[in-house]
Image 1 (spheres, rainbow, N blue to C red):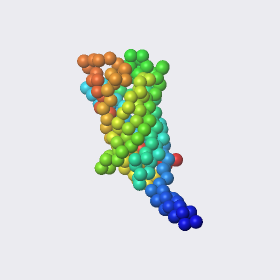
Image 2: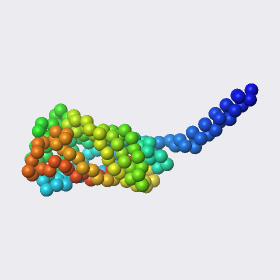
Image 3: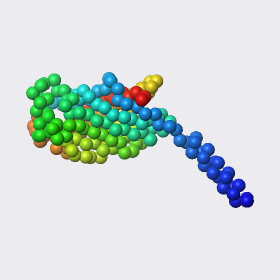
Image 4: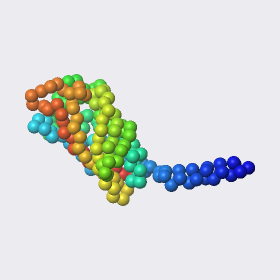
Length: 179
């Protein structure tokens, strides 16, 4: 009898601590106003469309989950011929691989900067990737922003070139709104 009371006390404490630690994740979707841009001597441009979902709560940012999709046809360099060439098999091969994706696997919060680890897929090539982000919340909207370097050669996008750098510097602003 005494053992069952102790068990009940431990169970009650466990349930109470689980409730205090657990916080529900808010569900968000990507909304308008996003920006994914890359700059180099040649080319520079942006992707004009991104879709996806984010699970996030301020009290437990390490539990953040992201699943994002960028249609390669949303690429805009400001040059129609360059945009068209980017869709060919040598570059993004839009016919076979219409999307770039990023799916998070884990998140660490380091001094307010989210270290979002995940899998990036470009042109059918999957690679582990780290995306660093600041999260700024305003009401039901959160904007994740930051920059990253993407080695296009490691994804098979184009060939080594004197004019196009291997490493593309990408900056982004990703506003999401509660579902």
